Length: 501
Image (spheres, rainbow, N blue to C red):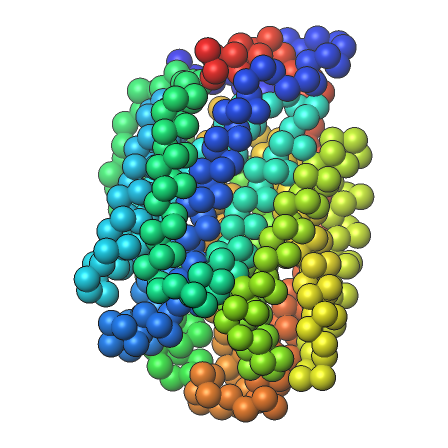
């Protein structure tokens, strides 16, 4: 049985706005998913700060050491496109329990890893559980929350992938200042176990699984396409300094060919409603325009998390602990501004949020491109708070606008596409900024820069981000409010009540 479409909901909508109230129990269901998604996404960039320690402990090269992050990102890129199939084929509760169990198993394996290979294997298992959480959270929110409150709830849910990567390095810096890297996983285990127990206790099934078959060629092409792109993009930074094991353009080319074949494969499958990723989502301008802008926003926001620690360390001289403390307020700002912007979105739509936010973002990026060793840390922290706040306002509004432009039966596909775009953008823009940083330094080894070289490198990276910010400012001018039904319907309420019954 398929999920009712957005047009069905609109036709049945009552004329009053009482349905804008959040149905009983929905907040608990979404709350469990939000906390769980935050926990699993926290690990995405958790080991970046710990990389020097890992290289020393396991006696591996920097190129090999990068696989603790690259392996995680590759697994995410390969499996996230499959999340739309998983969400259509299985119950919410089943998906949650299996995904969280995989994450716990991977975390435990990484905590006790006797060799570097076992650590990477643990990270891959972690990512296998992580991949489905963001699409699951977005789809559940769109299905259960009345349209009149959707901006507020989606703002909170979309803050998760923005906050978690920012908090990850900060938390890592604080923990590593007093404990070994294994505690990054040990401390996570009891929290994940509690989340698993709470989900097993409170989550109930909200949809009827569809009898869709897994298209193995689509899965393989997805792995080649998205995996090749992420791997190739992750090598760009190393290639700019001459340390890449292979040319990054080879896996990128393979990835593009695989992606093209993947798209061609989906076209006949979607006619039978069995596509791995339904390409019809891209025919809706109300979805595609925010998605394209989000590609640049997410890529810049996530990608700069690779450069900012380098600038703060080599230009302003912050220690690992100070770096962690510096980044924490930015994560808090994202949460606060995302919640506030959701309320504004429900009243006035995306444009009054995303246009001013894009202007502010551009101004802050220009400021960062002028930073040197004389810039005070307090000024930098205030600028970073403004930057993350503007990011949150755009991120939440763009996601809500895009998802609201799809019929309900395409929510899993839209959520899967959005999560995939974020991963690809993070890998792509991170590589672009690292390349700019390396080239701007004028040195062959970015790990041994003088203050002047690091300053020049930071200027180059942030000027690149500024140029991308101009594209974002132009793009938000084309974003419009999605034609959502104005209020909830009896069908919405029935789904919500079933979730907590």
